[in-house]
Amino acid sequence: MSAAPPEHDDDDALSWGDADDATHVDAAHNPVAVRERVGRDTDAPETSGALIGFGVFGGLYLLYTVAWLLTASTAYVAGVDAVLTGFVEVLRFLSIVAPALWFAVVLWVARSRRTRTRLLWMLLGAVVLFPWPFLMTRSFG
Image (cartoon, rainbow, N blue to C red; front, top):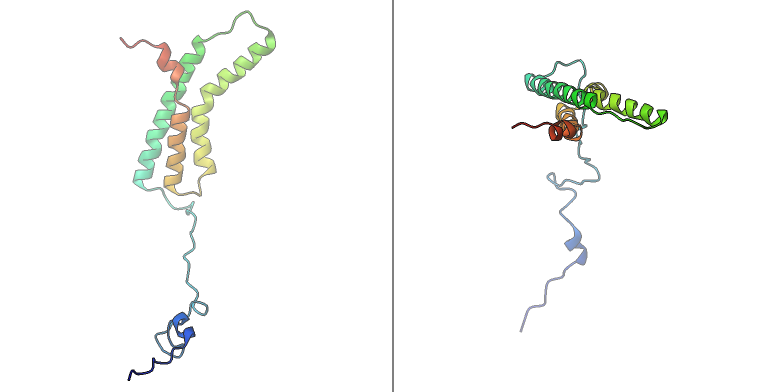
């Protein structure tokens, strides 16, 4: 004859061990320690790589400012009313100071952020503020 199947407790399938066992770990009683993300220490000096990166972007933004200045000084609006001329002058001024303003604002607003974040904002500004009118109106041949 065949032997009777062993008695099984269906709840054993849902158990991960004996709670009295010394190696048993219960997640409800042992919370995982989560490392808090700390902000950048604003008093700490910048690394040399960060200083080089900010210097490169500072030089690039200076070149952008000169390019926008040269482009804006050659563009003019004639035969329109005074209000439109005023708007053009304001936009001309903003186009000239935008690269320098972007550089200063990123350094000031994001001073407590990580260096990588600030350099990514600098890269975004370099793409957005690229002086296309200067490039397109000059002949290099």
